[in-house]
Picture 1 (cartoon, rainbow, N blue to C red):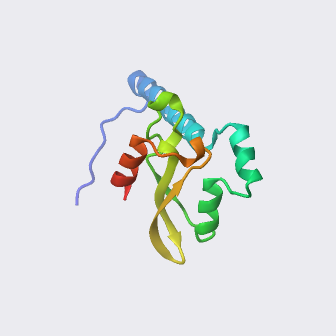
Picture 2: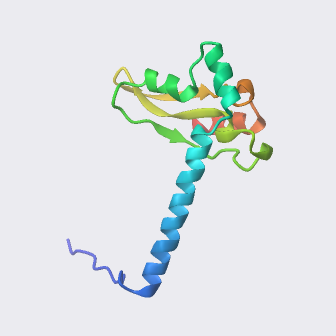
Amino acid sequence: MARIKSIIQTDSNEFQENYRHNKGLAEELKLKQRKARYDRPQKDIDRLAGHGKMMPRERIEKLLDPGTPFLEFSTLAANMAYEGDSPSASCITGIGIVNGKEVIINANDSSVKGGAWYPLTVKKNCTSS
């Protein structure tokens, strides 16, 4: 089979500009994902801890087989809705490995409005699994 020859000129100004632009967009995406996953008001974290509850990502980490990956779905679901009050649509969904088997995981995020579901939470849960 003949190898496909690339005609992309990685040393061109256009390529370099596009590369910098896209690298910036990727960093912006990572920051938005990090915020949706981890930024919660300290009062909500303290409230859960006071009730002896773990944060949802801690629960998922304890559920998964050690050292195995977790592929999260729709981290930014609802990030533009509800005035930003429902990061990840108030739930975490994804694929992980439990007891050697791939499973779908759905964890309500009780640090978001006590785990209340929004219309987009329902939509995320119906389309993720």
